[in-house]
Length: 258
Image 1 (cartoon, rainbow, N blue to C red):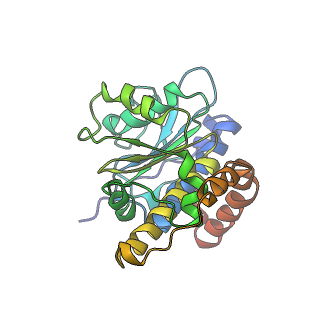
Image 2 (spheres, rainbow, N blue to C red):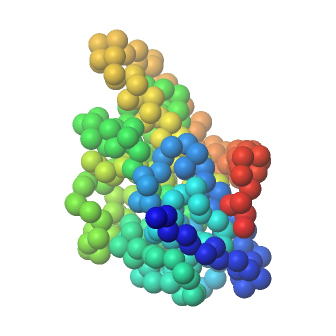
């Protein structure tokens, strides 16, 4: 028998307009992750910082599929992952370990997204990591860093090492685990994740034919492309790509705004 959850309603009147805008963007990001096939049933998380000095964050209910997430259903939590508003949904404090470490260490980390895609896991298990095989990989490669696998991320002591490995960069490959992206806004974070996942998918496809048939770019080109990728990505994300993605979602199903 299917379990029916009574949806949360009327939350818009209980939060600030700024928080509601972030809720809408984060709910959209969850729907887009599902749309692109990057979700993992109910597992993995996307989080966003709520404006203000309280160190509050938004994260998904642990018992909803990503295509079910709405702006109202997102749970507001503290730095320990505990809900601070009444909610009918289940939360997963352990799932916030990675996110809380980054949010607390990086003031510019307005959003953090972590997924377990097949391509991302495959590249995370390859010795060379992300290779400069495609334009997408070259554009983002200088922003990619790595963190060694230490088991399921429930150990609070791992947070310090993860933050140190991330540094000031905005994309990470968690070895033998998956991918992670950071951004000042939900829009920037999603586009960083998109580029990383797209590059991983292309690499897996290219390597499927064997290493002998690969064509490597001319010397110096990866470095040139990396420099180009660091210019204007935020503007492209916030002003161009994200509005287009929201229009796409509205055409398909606008209930993420509820």
